[in-house]
Length: 494
Image (tube, rainbow, N blue to C red; front, side, top):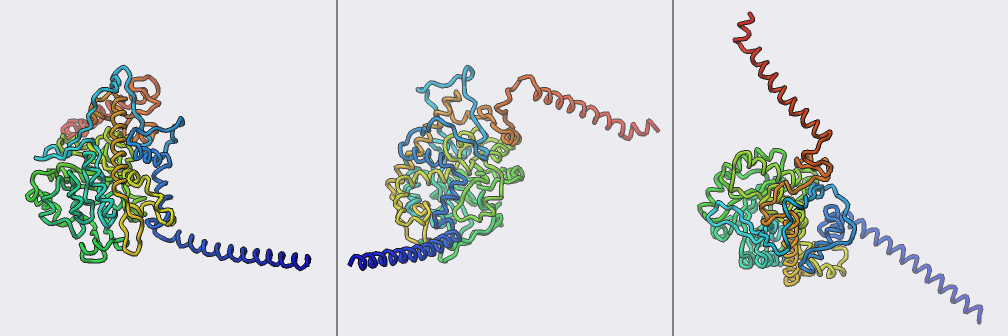
């Protein structure tokens, strides 16, 4: 009996082992097939989205963003400082106030109030120089996300934007300040909608998509398809043929509000500005190469354009050199928090668009609801989906709470930065407050580096003196050469 029992137990163990091995092989095969499918699928619909996000956002920045969303207060971090990343904004530091100027006491009132389009009859007045970046309904965000953003904008005192998507009446109802983005899509062009806007931004292109034609076919909700009357949305490339008649047309319909244009940051930026400023615009939005977009071609978003910081500096320099005042400059792309916003303001921006950061903050406390569908990306909470792909809906109340917290924390951090710089108004920020940490930042932005003190004797001063003397000598030689080669001089020598 004992031998038979041992044989039965042995056979059971062998059978169980074989079943386990077979299950493992089947499971491995299924997992491999799932992973293979995952790697080939769109990042928008999978956990791979997280890896793309971490290329632009470090874990440190994500955690600090979540802390701001959780508490609504200035974010703090442990002892160690973060390691520099290649971002141009991360290569800048602030110059702290000491004796001159003096740092402001904590009780000092520091103003963040901002006006967009001061020359307009009804400028867009904001509580702080931060705007919610344009993100369209249906082609990007879900309706619940748009409504949450509109409520956040009203609570915090900033402005929401329609983005390139169609007009949402609920969004306009919730937003006290609403920017209509005149897109190349088949909507938002009716006179009734134009009259509802507190500002109008003509979309000519953006950093992540340049000015290429864009086809939106996937993840379009039914409501959007009904609005457009079609299943494919096409945004045509290039400048609209009637562009130069568009600004006067919009002013006739809504004459009191600021009107601006959004362009991608390019190497020929100054030439673009020369054309745009001739149209008497109230603001210009420059979208840098760091800007993001839902479903933009990777070959465009990764390899086109110039950095936002460099573009803002060049644009402000050009406006100053042409003595052009009253045109607000909005920076867009790459700003993750108060430090980046303050740096862009110091480089010449009047306000800064923020998109990804606020979406991270709004999602705080709700990503765990995606655990049962782990292979879906975190943006499933905020982005639009087709009826075939149902995801947990965003809790609008929680999204508004945490989004508002992020803005409140950002406002506090901006005030802390200004306090440490000895400034009482956010628009007193200038390049004098910045220090370049790298030679790249010094060269592109023409800033002093942390290794250089203006007025200090040394090799840099000697090189500067030599360059000045060379320039003086070159001018003198040029004048002498012109005299020698003039017709009168040639005739005299003959």
